Length: 282
Image 1 (cartoon, rainbow, N blue to C red):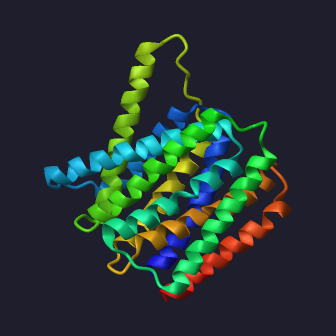
Image 2: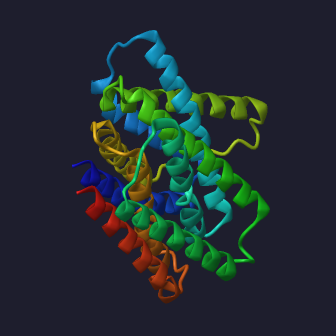
């Protein structure tokens, strides 16, 4: 079951990235994240419940990792084409796989290793293609943000594996979103007080609600997947990053980033890798 939950999360994440890219046309990074996360917290408020202080400290730390990953990832999206951002971010499973083996003793069978290898090969080839296609649009600043986003995102995934052994998924999701909202609100307050004259104003955009719904459901599926006793974080993270397939298609058809034919080989490799992951875990 955790495999299909992971696939559902990947599909929604792909649409989520497209919606965020579109939302940047009307609002800045912090407003998009603050409003969408606040709405997500509102959706999940029925699941807020008391818990040990230590659990909340763990969740505050997770919220810090998530905030860093989301802010840096969306800032990178301002600088780079969506296909470039999504592809490089999809390299996160490489870090998760390595550290899952080191920290949690996870072991993959041969079929699963072949699946991971295919997915990673597709990501490397696709990343090289995007750099070649978009040299003029890329920047050191954007790539630096992406590196920060990938590393903090991998750290968050590893942290999830640990805390979900002792906490319920909806408890983690609801409180994490609340703490992220508070952190982003604090950042916006500091930015406003530091420069009131040039502080950007919020423009309401229906995409903010769409973003909130997508990330709420995608994260819920992910948390329930990781919570299952036989779930392997390395597999869940690899499958989840295949959201790049959805993002590729959206970037090509909706955002006109083009050359979808050049990406077909990488997409086929990635789909083949996911098939091996699913088959080897059955």
